[in-house]
Length: 598
Picture (cartoon, rainbow, N blue to C red):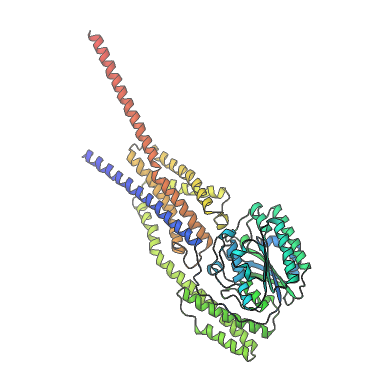
């Protein structure tokens, strides 16, 4: 009976080892498939909108020339330390523009030019280098200006040519120089264009502050020196502009972390200055606005069509508008928003746009034609608010429905392992759970100790994230695993099969602790990006934890083998030693027996 029970116990142990190893290998492969598909969907994300309206309706211009100065990488707190910018702030309308994430280069440039956030503007989400840029596929300020018959100009660093053909511009100049030399060359060329060609819309980008902040840190002495040089260029620009006929709008694409880096949702990265000066500006604080508001405001200033994809608002409190002009601009803006809302609701499978939103826009047009400017403004405002609410409501409804459908699968991933743990819990299993918790805590502790934050702003490249994950996984698994091994041996465990089973149990519990947050993130975000952008912190955590799962599960599937082999080797040496001792003893006995028998 004892022999049969022993055989049954060994067979059960072998089965447990095979099952646990299979689960760890499956976790490795499943995590690898998930993270590769997720990363591929991030790089391949496309706007759900396929048909974007391109309005042609123009309104009365408030100015004939507008210059946009884009200071790349300029944080809000650094901006207000710049004397020229502070002086302009006192003369004009100013505020903080909040940048929708991800705050990488092309998404922010595209948001600025289209008035649409990255979820809809179809820019590559993580494009920071010119080699990653793609042509704009949606309506934007320069295209709208050309439809209105306005002249356009572009001056900045190389990379813009990958967004749209430079042949579309009346004047353009891109410099490959970096640092102060590039900015000086850009400002000189912009002043030349303004003096000789008088473009209606000119964008000037200055890049040295971004380059210095990324290399040295946004609050470093080098960055402040770069900000002073940029401020000097702004002073030269202002001294050569006639602000009685030219509007000047100064802002940034994104900020930088104190140590350098951008792309995530941290406030220093998302909050950038916005200053507007010129004839017809209403001086004062605007508070916090959205970066998406800049494109509609520029369109209203120049009287050109609003880009068809714009979701921002016209900053009317920064403009001096008489009732007729205000009614004209609101009515045109309402028509753009109604057309966009129709396409968006179709694209995400929402209900058709209500008659209320469409009807108010039509009645606003009729009121404008008969000179009822106040009524036209009110009705256009109602139409804008209704269209915005219906788009938001349809988005929330679809998100809720999809997340609800994912709850059962995510719940099973959470509850089944928990049931097994509680149902078959022993003192050893709870000790191994503690070791698994320690292993996960050590991993994240190492990440934070290295200065990491859970943000896309720290992800310089996928390769660096993969390498860092591997380097942190090895010591974290080693610490938790060696503690688990020591605990099992201290208990007096002598069966190598049960030792192997215990170490794999530690591995499974470690994987379960990683699966718990991933199951929650699966419910929130799904497997891959499809038609909406989730919280960027949640997206980063999903990639971060999946990489940890892949490396942890792969290591934990095989790491008990060396200890088991060592145990087999020690037992083999012990058996050999016993056999030698037995042989020596028998030889000695035979020798003495032979000697004394003589």
